[in-house]
Amino acid sequence: MAVADHVDLPKFIEGVRKRNPGQDEFTQAVQEVAEDVFSFIQDKEIYHEYQILRRMAEPDRVVSFRVCWEDDEGNIRVQRGWRVQNNNAIGPYKGGIRFHPSVTESTLKFLAFEQTFKNALTGLPMGGAKGGANFNPRGKSDHEVMRFCQSFMTELYRHVGADVDVPAGDIGVGAREIGYMFGQHKRITNSFTGVLTGKGIEYGGSLIRTEATGYGTAYFLAEMLKTRGWDFEGRTVVVSGAGNVAVHAAEKITQLGGTVVTLSDSEGFVHDPKGFDADKLAWVKALRNQRRGRISEYAKEFPEAEFFPGRPPWAVTCDIAVPCATQNELTEEDARVLLGNGCVAVAEGANMPCTLEAAHLFKSAEILYAPGKAANAGGVAVSGLEISQNMARMSWKQHEVEQLLVDIMTDIHQRCVEHGGRAGTGHVDYVRGANVAGFKKVADAMLAFGVV
Ligand SMILES: NC(=O)C1=CN([C@@H]2O[C@H](COP(=O)(O)OP(=O)(O)OC[C@H]3O[C@@H](n4cnc5c(N)ncnc54)[C@H](O)[C@@H]3O)[C@@H](O)[C@H]2O)C=CC1
Ligand SMILES: O=C(O)CCC(=O)C(=O)O
Image (cartoon, rainbow, N blue to C red; front, top):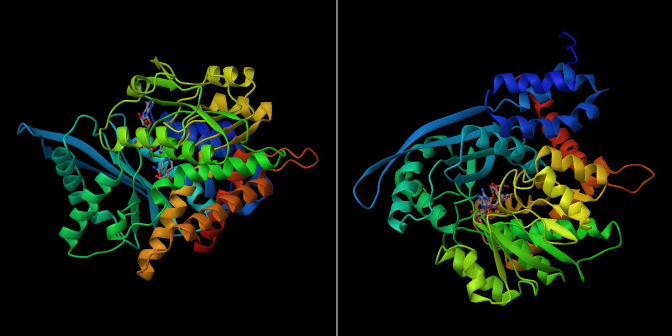
């Protein structure tokens, strides 16, 4: 086989950009990984010869389909759905489904690419995928959401399966949507299989899956703080988002001794200087899951809190920031403000919430900064445990699953230290650690298969 030409990083990124015109989020995710992987493979010819990173940055397949449904007024509505299967070198494709009006092919390609590295970090046998639709569940009745989910699954079922591709939830897809999709899959295929995770406990779900992403982020943060002899006690924490990840990250951080003072949504943020205790978080969960309301309502219920419309929470002085809403929600300017206010740690509960420029600032300031693919891997890890329970046709106890979650997050932290620790200084570059450790596992499996 010919020895490959070594393209340099700018040329590689230029190639990705040219092959994926207009897909800026995807190019950004690939660049963030390539910045670390290029230096790691510099003296490792085999990865060049087999074009491993180039192959990882080309999804195995992108399936796109029409989703028709009927609204409550009898109008026929048409949406676009996708499943991006990025890489199944180490296990069946695995990754969430997002329903949000902003979803594009680029969004799902970036998420599927990130998922490939994240899933490898968990140590469980899962490849990377992501799916979704440009459908907005907000403001829709339960029956409209049900009809949409059934129509979405009527196409998706051809492409998924317990040993093929196992989707789960993400933005706009929670217990309600998973239930409707699972029911439709069961009906079409006349089979009861673990084709989705995040299922209700009554029909094969795992305890702790709902909490796992946020809890895992808090456990990962605790490990990071430990490297400097710190913990959560007395620390002020700013969290963005008010969804599944944000609320459970806030819950575990509070249990571990931190004071979480903000939550947000796309309309603005609430600042509660006294902190969100267990009762207040229970109120937020009901607001979100039952009343499906906006976070601004919190400030009407709890007079000690204030709502700030149209702004993210990053200007609130804090020790720790945990972005848990969506991609690119924390900009270079936000990063400067956080650093200027003395923030010492940032852990990404969301996927790629920091822009490349913000991430570079955190890296060069040498604060504790964990990328989503490491810090939020607890969700997919417990999805992996849900698959194991379904395969064995049994259910583990809550404390068993939570202990496994703690162990997996501690292991991921250890892998980041191993591949991102800077000799002599004690500083850990968690972005590099996660990128290199995730790359190496998937790359070595791909090498074993030859050119496929
Ligand atoms: N649910 C899971 O298990 C996992 C989720 N993630 C990531 O965590 C993030 C949040 O996901 P979930 O909490 O599951 O979704 P969710 O639908 O439960 O909550 C999303 C939250 O983000 C806010 N949000 C959405 N778009 C926004 C925007 N443009 N500006 C400001 N706020 C916005 C929403 O108002 C909501 O509060 C996403 O990046 C997702 O990919 C990562 C790993 C696993
Ligand atoms: O649990 C899963 O399969 C997917 C979770 C997810 O979408 C993510 O990690 O971003």
